[in-house]
Length: 241
Image 1 (cartoon, helix red, strand yellow):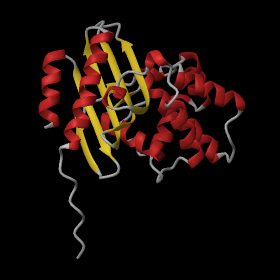
Image 2: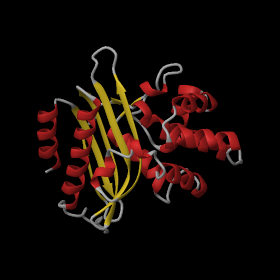
Image 3: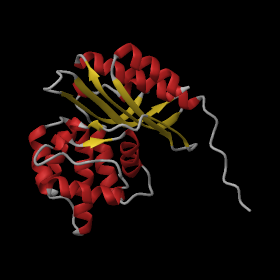
């Protein structure tokens, strides 16, 4: 059902779209599309997770500067803040090291200072969301709480994307116009409450002719993913012999 819905969205928009969605309460899960996408500002959640893992290893809390810079990076999507924390975690090698711990296996850090050119898959970003929101995680409860809090305080003009699928949300979006094609990469991920349940939801896209069209595509895909997963049967319990 999800594949049919998204094929229609792709045909209508001309964009390439990947989705991953999980209903943690039931274990229902669906992934559509395994191709890598440019993260743009979606990488900022990954950068913050890497920073928090680094602080955990050093047995310390974030400094006041790190905390305020992280807030600016997530809430307002400030690029200078992201660059500063990218340097703090050790750039691409630091992100790659953190992702081994977080369970991201198909994410390639951006070259040099270009954190926004990190490439990832919907499945990997679902793994990151699970590390951010689930109790069983390499991130401590305090680290998860910080990320969750900041993702719930996104600036009002950036509260689009997966929020279209539900009434309560914590999210981060990414958007970037590629200089070579002038087409847009538009991404959104987070946790959303809808129809009395909770969903972890990732929508990655590239190839939209404008940002507004890309946002519309992502929002249609988010609503379709939640609708499709609600209609799916629950996973079969394991067979115990």
